[in-house]
Length: 115
Image (cartoon, rainbow, N blue to C red; front, side):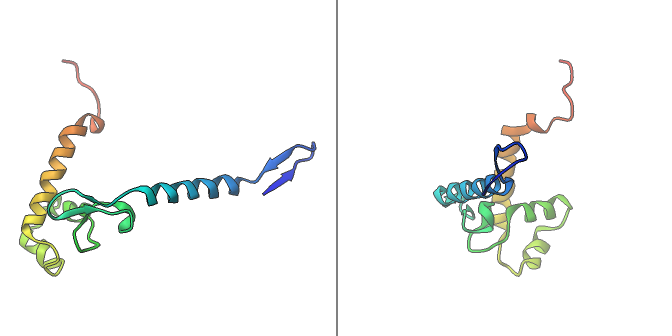
């Protein structure tokens, strides 16, 4: 949508740029493919906005990692989610998170210390 300002200049409404940006994101998501990240974990742009989930569920990996970080027993986590995920799936999530942390640890530094 265009309009003229008081000086006769053509202006575009901000909503157009937002809509086109949103449209570009939608196209980018469609181009993404389902990724098998492990035996139990998948990232599918059609499920939970592409966030990693446990196969066959909409349980996001970060949800389980938070429970583990809170100190919840794995058996309790499995029960909480009605058996939709297994202890093996939790172990895989931790293993993948560990690899990712090692690769990106420098991004989480609070401050750099002298050598």
